[in-house]
Image 1 (cartoon, rainbow, N blue to C red):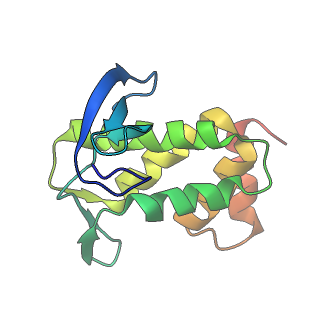
Image 2: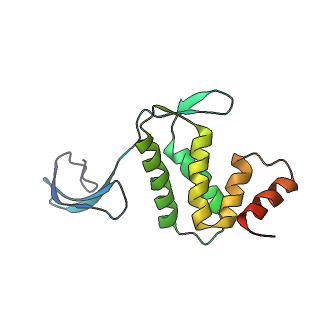
Length: 150
């Protein structure tokens, strides 16, 4: 780990703590050259997971792409960044626990939908409208009715 102050490559870990969030470890480090301290976060990453798209194409799992989709659904909604990060971690953890090398995009969409449904119904509808490819207003009405709205 490079020091963010002097860019020296050698640092030592002074303290290590597991965060409240699943899969995150916080490390307090000290530069062996300048002596300054800084924090790093270590997060488990899903490596090698491939996503099977609706049209049959396969692409590497992209956490940032997933995050952009969630952020878009949550835009202008009262949802904290921490809540969004927690949803993202929950989805990644569930994917990791599946232990598969390939997963259909529909599975990821369902996982995200479940997380959004627990947090914000409007964000859930927004995400669902894109993920499930709503064609007209009747699709929205049907989904809202299932949520218990009129």
